[in-house]
Image 1: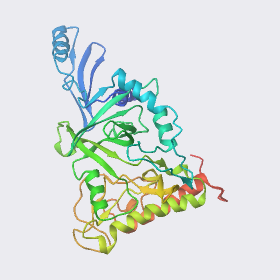
Image 2 (image 1 turned 90 degrees about the vertical axis):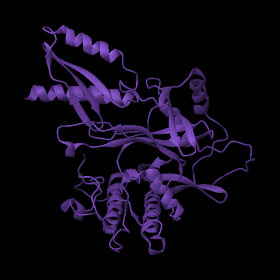
Image 3 (image 1 turned 120 degrees about the vertical axis):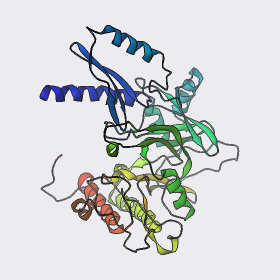
Image 4 (image 1 turned 30 degrees about the vertical axis):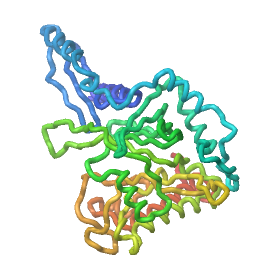
Length: 394
C-alpha cells in the first residue's frame, strides 16, 4: 500500500543518513510497528531481518535482544574500525591547514612557479586549500582515515566529502580533499565499496606503466578487509562488495568549471588522448583497457605544470574502476569476453545509443568515443550560449 511504501522510504532515509554521517559497515535498526518489532541489518549489498515478535506479550525477547546487542564490539555493531575521530591536536592542525597561505599558487594559465628549496614544503594551488577549508563544516564530523597499502599503513585527515553518492542502491562512494599525514600534502581520497573484480588503483598503475597520458597518479590504495555480502534466500541476487580506498595525487576540479568553449574542447581532448593511449597497438602489450564509463563526472580539470607555469586547462580521465581488458580475444573492435556483473556499466546520459539499445552486448571502443561526443554536446548546451530552442529545462 501507499502507507507501507511511505514507511519504507522513511526508513531508508534514516539508514542512508546513518551511512552518510558516520563510517559504518552496516546499520542495525529496531523496527517497531504497533505491538510488534523486528531487528533489521542493512549494508551496501542488501538487508536481512528477523521474524516479527510481539514485544508486549514477549518482553523477554526484546530485553534479550537489546542486552545481547549491547555486548557486541563496535565493529560487530557495524562501526568501521579503520576510521576514528580526530584528536584535538589534529583538529587544530586541520584549522591551520585551511587558513590562507601567501605561498599558494593561482591556477590561472601562465602563473610562474617560484624556485623551491628541497626542504621547503610543496606548493599548494589556491583552490585546493579552499576546497579543504570548505570541507571543514562545523556541522560535519572530522575523521582520520587509514589505508593499508603495500608500503604500510598511511593516515589521512578529512572533513565533509566533496562527492557523496547517497542512496541504498549506490555503493557508498565518497571522495574527499584529505591531508596526507606522511607526505604532508593535500591529496584526493576515494572511499567506496567495489564489486569483486579488479581494483582501480591496480588498473591505473598498469596504465601508468604503459605510459598512458592524462590519467591520475596513484599514491596508495588498499582494501580495509571488510566485505558486504548479506546472505539472501536467493544467492544469485547477492551483490558482493569489498570496502576499498584509493588515494590520488591530483586534486582536480569538475569539468563544469571550464572557462570557455576552447577550454571545454581542450579538456575533453586531453581525456580522449588518455583513451587513445590505452587502445593503441604499440601499447596493447601493457594496457589494452576499455574505460566503459566515460562521462562528464569522470573528466577532471587539473592544473598541470608546463615548464615554469601552471596550465589551468589540462584534463584528466579518472574513475577507471569499470575498465575491462580488450586484449583477451585480440580483436581490433574492442569486444571482450565474459560478463562481470548483470547491470549495465556507465552513466546513462553518456552511454552510446547502440549500448542502450543492446544492453547485453559488450561495449567497444566506438562506444567510448561516442560518449565523448555526448559530453561535448551536453556540456555545450548546458553551459555555453547556443541557438537551440527546444532544450528541456530539467
